[in-house]
Image 1 (cartoon, one colour):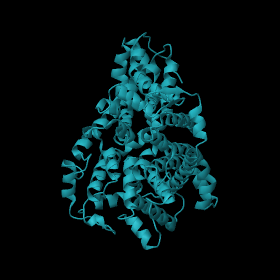
Image 2 (cartoon, rainbow over the protein chains, first blue to last red):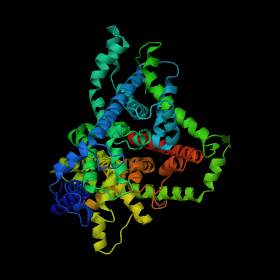
Image 3 (cartoon, rainbow over the protein chains, first blue to last red):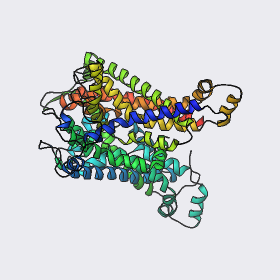
Image 4 (spheres, rainbow over the protein chains, first blue to last red):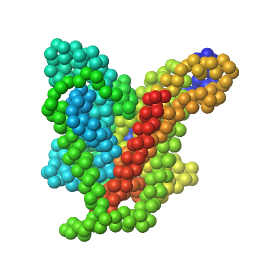
Length: 283
Length: 293
């Protein structure tokens, strides 16, 4: 910049720092609550600084779950389910959309455009707007309370298909020509040339879709009735809403911390891929 | 855009699109068609008999004051989420863009809320404002504001708005920041040399150049407020108190699963789908413009 305005630079730092503090505050309070004993968390004002029950609370929710209530299930179970669901959704989406994008870009065949539009339309039909009938379909296929039911209905994705289509369109035709001249079959071209070139796009998409899968709430809430299939995000909100008693805030907040940790770590440590994924899936 | 060079295979392409098409047909088109069909049926309470009634469900919906209240609420809610959310993220992005030292650290500290599930965000904000132990509610009470979102509808709505914005700020921030960084520095420097101060430069140069990003984010945020906030509402207020935070997408769920009014819920689904189709269309118009920009 051509000018130097110290007070403006100060204001910029100040505003951003205030923003960072306000945005971080709810999580700080959650962390603090997760390190207290239950009695401390029953009267206001609650402490602003961590207590000494961190290990105790986290061990308890991980191995036993939340109190003795109905629907109390250890976090090691729900976190495993969430991991299965997030990985299943991310990998499943990438697999089916990369091959369908390959077909749409590299082949001419009847109904190609119809298929393209059919995939496009799914953008406008998220689960939330067709809850009841989708539940009916999954129920009639016998997929309630199963990993297949948690994962498969969510893996059709227009955004992932578009991302790969966009990327394939930018791959130079010369490569395809060279492969054809050398007598490579389409699948060989896909496997040996296209796939290695798409590595970064795949990784970026994986980060976004992992978060998407992990953070699913409505879908697991609907189709799981057995506790052994609960996911952690859904169970945290469920327990917070149990109306019968005062929540055990220390344990609930320890669960909330564990529900946030994996996706937040993914975003922080794979920030470059995450930003790239966000920008690319938007196109 | 099309490829010049393609492969000639008869069956392979169908095989490749088959998994995606199968899932799309079974889990997207079939339920959506059923929603349309169900929206024209009235079932008795035990689901035994259903009668085809054409648009009776829609007619009932449009005569239902609760539905109008929910429509109105959804409009207010998404206007608040979009306007406050965009304003806050723009402010943060403009400031972060000015910062040279420490910019990437700030960025890391601002993007992570994207990773927090809306449903978990609801729990967190519910805890902060909990009438009996919430620290913010306690502070508000100390200064004389009686904050109880469990009883007060307007406060509940405000709280849902804050929780919804909190998870969306990082997304908006990243796009605004990218937009700001793509503005040529020479333009701003030229204006500075001509004697335009920071405020003047922002309103006359940065803001107009940023407007395509702004429009795009506006549509994304409205879509988010319509659909993406289901988890926030569900975890924080479950539509209450009364119906004070029962936005349309929550009402579809509530009427369908809790109220067992399948026809009415399906009719609402159909209307929501139409709204979504319109919004997605607008979104794509803007994206096209953004790309050509």
